Length: 622
Image (tube, rainbow, N blue to C red):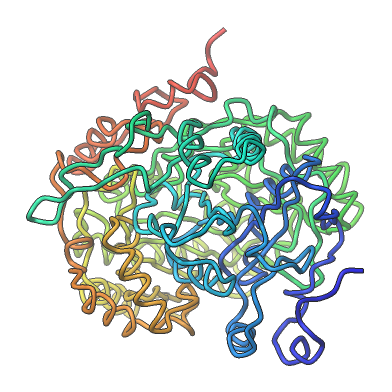
């Protein structure tokens, strides 16, 4: 009988004990003694966040379809349990078997955002696994990382044995088969890593050396062993219908962030926003067929009892069969108490018509993401959204019964001026005015509410803005204060609200996003000084990080405010993400010249993603 790793006394003393007991509906239970490979799948954040991540559930389901693999889950313990585990020397454990993580063959991290880096060290530490790959012994699990942050793995390189670059459905079977073969042949950990480095998409940091110029920029990045590839090409599912999906999603005992069935309708994006990393690293756009989605929608709703299904993608409006899919879902499920959620829609007549059918308009607000306050700056970032389209969408929404609108912006974008900054308040005011212009008094359900919020711009790898400089913390805040003051001048200020993100967190994210191997020492120092759950504002301690940078002799400005030269060698340049550096340079220059680039369906801009042989690049070919 399965014994819980935590006793009743501990479980009753911590928040949400259901985070740690496992055994949820549809969780996979196997006999650990009857499998060849045990894989601990970790999302380095609290359970409610990790269980909302689609990619983790896809791989969990896929791995467990193999009879020889047992994939279990592990999440970062919340701070209350973390303290008790350290005091009582309780090793971190997997939810399914409750066995210690150190007994597994693999510990795999999905790395979704930079602010979880200290949580990765927490998981290793509590598991009793040496933080540095070079210190691990034969019996230690192999630590592998994947996800969007693996596209610049260098700040984490010393802590990982290997990284998987790209989409996990393509090469994990080969990796598992290799592991079994090496072990059968009595090979060592080192033998496995040398052989794994030959598998497409696999990066083993130990097999690469970095040298630096006197100014701190990278001079060279080279393999240090024969037969190790010079560059790593991302893995990509060319035809998404060929890839497995989640047949039986796990149903948590407690409410999680995304407490619903999630149906991925497509991967990638055609839009080409110049700030968006996901839009570049997931190119080209690839769609699921309508029949595939109908099958999995029915399957997942039937086996979970969930009352909501969300259609997931970077830009749902661009899915070719959206109308047919939504019609099917409405006809099949809407009368059975199932709500349909449609995030990432471009607000137009079709989208509003769809939403009016699937939402209770009294309980929802609409979201627009203009990103910038003026048309000039929207052209710089290639948003492909005009003020006319925004206001027309708002007018149609207000006429359809909505009276609450959220507007998302970024501050600190390249070439930003005071006019662009104040434009945020002016655009919010125009949206409010549209309500009063378009909706007669007798048809208004209360006042309009326009909520604008701004995050601060962080340049990311594999975007045209990877060469851009960032603002300092003080500059970010000054810009937010300009917006705030401008809102106070607006005629409809009682209908307007404005908020902005934390600037100090943004600066740290900027360092981690474009960092090199030198940053690993800072992450480790900050962790040892108490940094944990940095993505949670109530736990983020900026002073710890500032001390860590000082202790390690690392200059923050080198990674943030410094504008890069076009010929600089970046820490991530050894990865081929499908978009060429030449294309990104061209787009960077287009941004500076305020020149728009058409989306992929309007015109092919030769980004390089066509080399994968599928997706939107080949849509119009017979």
